[in-house]
Amino acid sequence: MALIMRKYLLIAGAAFVLGAGSMAYFSQRAVATPEPHAQTYHMLELFGNVLDEVDHQYVTPVDNKKLIQASLKGMLTSLDPHSDYLAPDDYQEMQDQTRGEYGGLGIEITSEDGVVKVISPIDGTPAARAGIKPGDYITAVNGKTILGLSVNDAVKQMRGKVGEAVTLTIAREKGDPFDIKLVREEITPKSVTSHLEGDYGYVRLSSFNEKATEETKAAIDALKAKDPHLKGLVFDLRNNPGGLLDQAVGVSDIFLNGGEVVSQRGRDSKDIERYNAKPGEKLGGLPVVILINGGTASAAEIVAGALQDRHRAQLVGLTSFGKGSVQTVIPLRGGLDGAVKLTTARYYTPSGRSIQRTGIVPDLEVAETREQAQEVADEAFQFSEASFNNALSADEGKSRIAPHEPAEEPPTGFDAKKGDFQLTRALDVLKYGSVQATPKMTKPSATLAQAAILRATHGAEIKPGASAPTPPVKPN
Image (cartoon, rainbow, N blue to C red):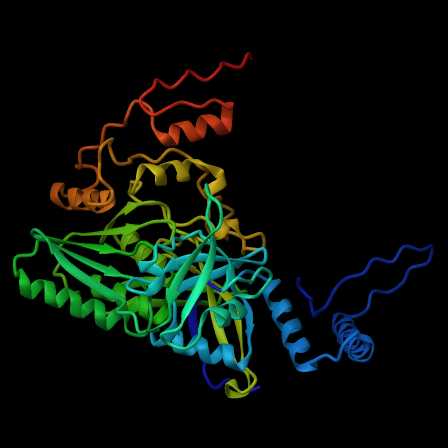
């Protein structure tokens, strides 16, 4: 099989396992276990036999091509949440998306136990304007259920002609399912937006498509032209679902003066590939604060982890998603037979951290709203790489931080509709020079997060403003 192209991606995407298995024989005489290759050939023959039975015996005629494609998909998706088989049409759609030009609604989605779940809406798209949120479940499209569909099949249901309306049924924690009506648009999202916050610059990068590095550079140049005396920069990677590895390296290169950005290691521990920044950075050493949250995934985590490890930026927000694996897209017959998207490596930050499942912990933990603080404290609202049943294990054996009360949340009376509390605290860090020097917020006497923790641990419930009861003391 000739490989026409290999493109490394870090993106969020009923199993029939086709491969060698093991079988135990219990009898009074020993029976030799088949050689691995012989077992594989036997299973391939079994697959052919089953396909033949279905072809001849199923109640209605079947499409063998679709059956085989479904079995390939089942085999790969059984490995981990991000490996997949892409049929030719799906492969073309993936290429369109990574180029940053496609039609649809503007939602990054994944599949969790047969249910389509939103990773993040893309800035400036119908989904973002309609208020779709990370962690939402999409259960139906135009009244037709999509439960049990693969991600690619669900995407096909949502895409269509530009200008046509489509209704999504959304299931969200704390409420009943509801419908949202959107109009399909030609999705050519500008991955970067920017503005000045007083003497500081603000740049938001929403995804790592093929234009991410050049657009980030252009935004920084524009801010420096507007204010030649810029004092620092807030780089917003919240709800950024990731994208292309080369763009993660390119964006990191903007802030670094050479040195390692990320390394990836495959099955062979000796097989290490390192990616380095080039000498020369665009900000001349100006201080940088990066905003992250639970929707910061994959390529966005590479950038945040690299700049944190290299002491080039401090991180404010919430622990990131925790997708620390690399997918290689392998075209089959030049894409004529689609492609295999296969997890081939884990990635590591410059200090050697594997953040698969665990995520990147910010230097200053800040919830955006008091409601979000409650969600961080409640096991029922956790959504991360660790939520997937078949997620790749954390290489270092570490576990993701358990539900807990965030270090900071907006004070009572803070208007989240008019202000961005995480951005406010990021600007404070720039103003005071470091997280350590930044005055810490005074906690309310009883927070929504504390109430969530008490409900989970003691079955108690408190109202904001009341005193938290003392936990019972267990006898020795």
